[in-house]
Image (cartoon, rainbow, N blue to C red; front, side, top):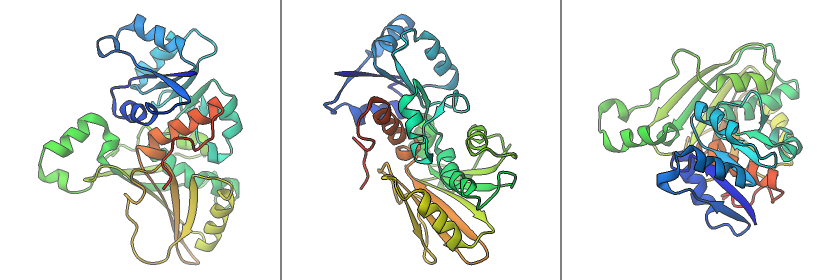
Amino acid sequence: MIKVYIDGQAGTTGLEIVKRLQDRKDIELLMISEEKRKDVETRKKYLNSADLVFLCLPDTASVEAVSLITNPDVKVIDASTAHRTQWTYGFSELGFKDKIASSQYVANPGCHASGCISILYPLIQKEIVNKTDSFSFFSLTGYSGGGKKMIHQYENEKTIDLEAPRIYGLNQNHKHLPEIKKVCGLENDVFLNPIVCDYYRGMAVSLNIKVDYEVAFNALKDWYSDTKLIRVEKVDSGMISANTLAGLDCMKLVVSGNSKRCTITSLFDNLGKGACGAAIQNMNIMLGFKEEEGLNLE
């Protein structure tokens, strides 16, 4: 039986992964006791006895956890920001599946970054846009993306400012920006306006570009034609809701606009394809399971 350990099982991402994996029959989930989960020696024992480890920790703690792993056979998926520009990037639909499968260390993508990169990477590879161009994204997310503190705030503090969308990352130094630039091979930093709204889960990440929307649609449709978790649609009327794929682990790219310019929106769940779902997908690839095993796709 393949053994899996989650370091940081009490956090939002860790709890979600535990819930997803606890009933699977193809793995043994190693559960550390509450009183020992911060004990270094006990953690070290668990980290080195697993076949695969999820790190659901703050950046500094993730780096420390990696230093505690001395068993060369342990595979690691880091859900933090710490290794996203250094380790194998865990977004298989970009053409990275074989590299993920053969890697010991895989960095799980950030939620906002997943939306940006899912749009931009294929367009650059197909030469619809250039690496030298400047790009600006806006990204709507449910409040569960902010972790336990923000969840408590939205569900227990009834202040007027929580009733409306709130823009953050105002200094344009959002922690997901380096991975977007690195993975897409951009020469310039991207602009990102993340916005948290009063709903629990779901994301809508949008990019505006001066490209015929038919051209953009065909390029993205072709790129993702062989993937099971990402579909591409063309929409030219109505509205787009950011929580359309809440509770699911798939992603939908919606292309809208006209012959002169278009908007491309990546829809997914910030706790699904934006975090836990992506982590489990990467685990499946690294351990040789079916890529979609245990994922919620409909």
